[in-house]
Length: 453
Ligand code: TYD
Ligand code: MG
Image 1 (cartoon, rainbow, N blue to C red):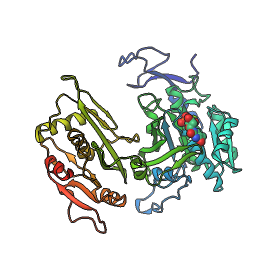
Image 2 (image 1 turned 180 degrees about the horizontal axis):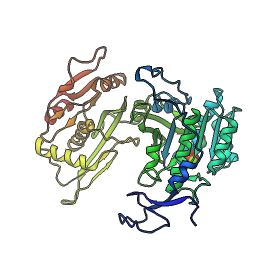
Image 3 (image 1 turned 120 degrees about the horizontal axis):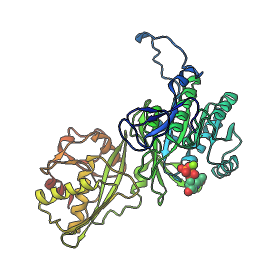
Image 4 (image 1 turned 180 degrees about the vertical axis):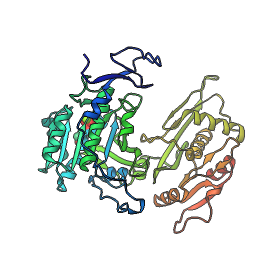
């Protein structure tokens, strides 16, 4: 079973064993031993060198940023921080069927169309299948090379032969190295493949995009080590029942994190959405109770989203609190604040809160919009039309200041909102050149007074 130069290493404590064991003899973790290459084998291996450069004096380091390779897919470039950095390893994770292969094929075609040869290695689909998808996406005759291969050494051989400007590996879980005997998709193989691709990327200044599958829980399948090895981790998210898709950067050595790219899945592939606020508010009915508009910040990008609430008499003692896009515990806290500080009778009421469009809102700045939507549904009275709401709610019912208020106000004004209800600490001297009226509030009660006509 065991290859000549491999050991079994506990992924939890690092203990080594010569054969596979169900339980680690050191830390007693179960099923944590994984086959890896023995260290002496790794040092004897002729890995491509990283350049073998000498240490440089700080002041002598070149300050000019390396030219990035634009993928030509505007929303993807935005998330990457302006395109792919040469020699960087980028991981795109997402659930099966979300559109990872589609997005990367579109990017590959654009890059190839701009004159840089692209090697697209698929361990999941035949060139015929990829071509069929490409035809639907309108890919024309460009220097795009398809390789159906799961052997890593073969992939690297083709890289050497074609010297492409971009390498795409779909997916890392299907790749295996002949240096290890474990099956593709095991932790040892994934780590080996990622590390070898990293060396290939750094060694020849080649940007490499790899696809990673995620488990049901949203974790990248395979070890956390994969996330540590790569330079950039992008998550592709979305609800399969809706056409909206977002790409979020959760780690980026060459750009800001939590940047967001928004797409729509159409019959012709993924379409970039340059104005997401418009998309997320498209189906909103303004004069209905229980609807509030919140301006969220995704990285450096303000996006307006609707928060919906529905309050109805539940079975006493068995009230339901159901949320989509909002944290349930946060909702419980906000309902208690409404009850204690404003005196709204919410005990025993069923409360449902929903953010349509599948945008998760983890920001505390969304608190006031949730509170406003719940109060509006409870009173069965719509909120004042044309107002956007944001602010964090404290336990005493106070409204706390939030970050990046100016960007949020500008976005609301641009989308035609005449008023922003926000923490008084954020009103300051207003925002130059914006016609939006700013209503500063200090407590939840004040905010509700301002929001109901
Ligand atoms: P795919 O890129 O194969 O997903 P992944 O690689 O993440 O598993 O996308 C598959 C889904 O996308 C599939 O359900 C069909 C849909 N799709 C479209 O709606 N339009 C298109 O033009 C393409 C190519 C796919
Ligand atoms: Mg795929």
